[in-house]
Length: 238
Image 1 (spheres, rainbow, N blue to C red):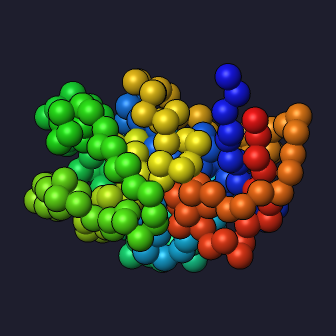
Image 2 (tube, one colour):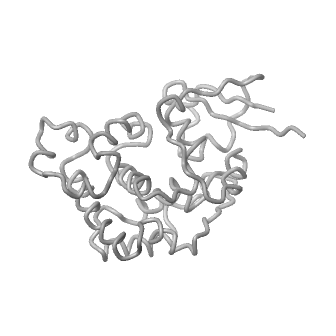
Image 3 (cartoon, rainbow, N blue to C red):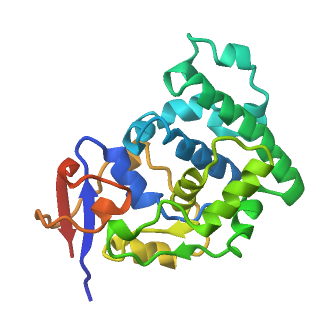
């Protein structure tokens, strides 16, 4: 039996659409990817997801594919120089936070064996499932996010307030906050232990579909905070 799927295509933000379709809400268990998403979630303090994702290649180049061991050893004076590639990404304050967090993350890995084990231990290794029907129901923080935030700060992490932590949890699948009307909700519920697919490069290009028609905006428009006015096309696929 066929089922309807709604896929949002943003003509101006293909990487944002790919991020929603392939990464957001998918459980992540790779330490480098977790560090990357913690960093990008923290960057939300200075820019929005579309801007962050458009610079993702640069983020990965500057932070050496988010290897915490390499980031922790960065020469701050050279790294933070006005002429450095990093200066085009974030403020000096935010860049210093990333380097410091890499150092603290290594301590967590030494204690718990992996950053993955540490993060998921707060949830008993099971994602939180929101089952929200409307964007207004999705929280900006939860009790679990508060607990993780407090523990991270106690360990010396910076820029990890509850709202940043919850954005991180949503991005790495610790919380499945796709609206129940979004086709990705059930798919993410079915994922047991997936390796997230990068939302950039060729994956930014919308997949070809056999039948297309402009349809009403569905829940996935709101899943990652999109404004309906920014949607170029919503396609209904049977």
